[in-house]
Amino acid sequence: MTHKLRTVLGDIDPTEMGQTLPHEHIQGVCDVYWYPGDDPLADPDPAAAPRVDNLWHWKENPVANKGNMHMTDEQVSIDEMRILPDLGVRTVVNLTPIGMYRNAEGLRRISQAANVNIVAGSTYYTAESHPSELKDMSEEQISQRIVDDITTGMDGTDIRAGIVGEVGLSWPLDPVEEKVLAASVDAHRKTGAALAIHNPYYAHGIGGLEPLRVIAERISELGADMSRVIMGHTDGFARDPGFIELVRDHGFVAELDMFGYQSGYEPEADFMYPADGDRVEVILAMAQAGLADRLVLSHDVIFKTTLMRWGGHGFGYIHRVIVPWLKRKGLDDKVLEQILETNCQNILPMAV
Image (cartoon, rainbow, N blue to C red; front, side, top):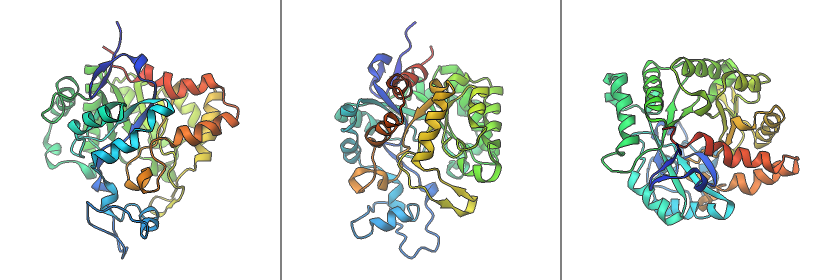
């Protein structure tokens, strides 16, 4: 039986995927992260965009400006993604959850105009973003919502999701998040779609690898196919000496997905964001350990300031900067192909 990749334009053969970015947000609104605090320059306008004279502030305090979290302009998305085919990237996974402006019809238009395959996700994000009705929904109802998105269509359209994700998890786990996780694993098992997890990477400064270990064990207990579970945001955990053994022991796919983000200190969680050099060293270490087949890379583009239009790195940064860096470090071309292309061809197509 040939497994197909489910895109917003329909099912395609995995050989048509090319290289893949498995964790991005082509369209989306993440007001859950808006935090103006006492910043006198904070802008509450959701339609605002950075200018030359205030770009420094939007990058320095990206969550203070609400417009930074509103990725709703389809033409901007088309312009940003048109560069990808020339870099060898043919497929992008849009992991914007339910209720956070997935824009199914827009994703179809963007895919056609940019000539890039788009896989849409379905599930719910972290507790702070949950719609009020989610608390009263049963696990079965949540699972059915996700299953319907994958088998029938999203948000009243015939455009089908192709992955369960990203499942938003905090630390400690919120009870409703645990219900969503169980429902998401159930939908993953019923549909044969891969499962993508938003891990609480801030927790690294608090509890080391414990959050990642506990979550991986819980997902396994729920019956997920761990070889098709993509554990997102493992960048922060990957600096721990025990990380590689944890990946080996639990069998999940480790995703380094914050390439290009500014390394900085998060005082509330006592957390230092990893630098790209940290990620490069993890890639080399995992390849050396024989775990290149358990690794995928992406950017998690989510802010306007991460787009090229406003001075950001865009969707091509890994291929423009990180791939040459890895080659200079001696990473074999076949291992790079495994990480950038083959792994997603094995993980993302529907297992039905």
